[in-house]
Length: 186
Image (cartoon, rainbow, N blue to C red; front, side):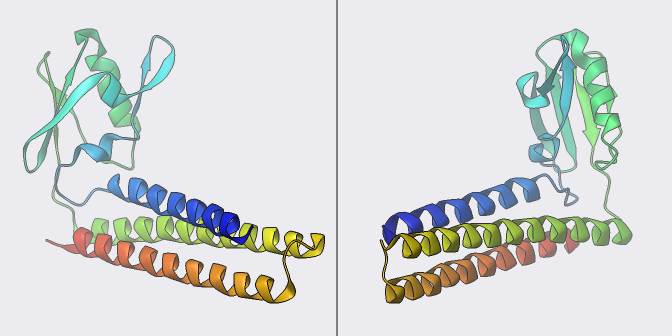
């Protein structure tokens, strides 16, 4: 019974860490990375479709992204979608075949802003980890009320869930510290 609770809590916490990693990969660091376009959705026959399903995205140079649509008429729609995402701050240019996205150098002010965004996403992950802890503790308390778990086992389980929470919160802190260093790197 307790092992099932541990496994469920651990799975929820791992999902929170994976979501944090995905969210942080979309934050611009001054270098070209195809992951900064992961959140872009393009109107494709009335459906908001992820950009990476409509075009190939490459990084031919450290500060340049190149987008080659699978269908040429999509160029205008892709440009419109990129311009609509103000958080990116990118200006696409096209030659009729491909879209080029030059990645400008981040200013000191913009780097600080990006670290604040990254910290916000880390806090969201911490909240998700705490929610997983709360859900796990609720399961333990319910099992104790039902008589499936003894008082000592419940107390031990509470301690174990808290250790898991502390371990994952520490991992979040390490991830965000690494991302902040990457953002502030000139």
